[in-house]
Structures are given as structure tokens and as C-alpha cells.
Image 1: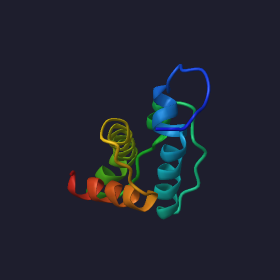
Image 2: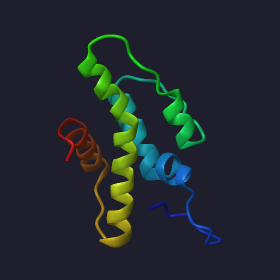
Image 3: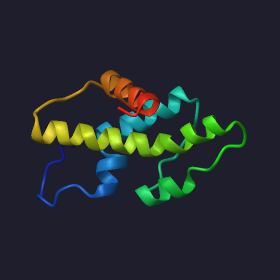
Length: 106
């Protein structure tokens, strides 16, 4: 998904889901929509471990917990579509895909 030059080792999971240009762009877009400042951890495990619970209404807490998982899912779907189907969403389309997936599960 990233256009990295050089020596063929492929992308790590952490790079693919957090640090490549498309993933980083989606994380930044979503977190800015939520008015959150965030320093991206190095690993997916660290992201999930640092995503703390909210206090309050149960439905809001449930949605909050799903945000990082949903971003990761959308980045994975985008990677697969770019790699295997030669399709590419714009950042706006990817952001809309995230919100639809988060709200509808589709």
C-alpha cells in the first residue's frame, strides 16, 4: 500500500496498519474529527493497550472501544483492494468507509 522504494522486505504489520501514508492519514483524520491529540505508538499492540476506557453511557463506551479496531479493519480492507483488485479510495472515501463501518458494521 505504501510506495516505499528499496530492498523488497515488504511491510511489517505495524507499518501497514499504523505508519504507512494511508494508515497514518486515516488515523489522523479520524482522531482530528474526534478532537483528540495523539502520538502514534510504535506497535499495534501498544495502540490497543493505550486505548483507555471512557466513563459514562454504555453505548458510547462500546463505540469508543471499536474505533481503533475499525480503523485497523478499514486500513486492511483498503490494502487488500489496492493490492488485489486495483481499487483505491480517496482519503475522504476512506474516512466515510470508516464511519459507515463503525456505525453499521458493514
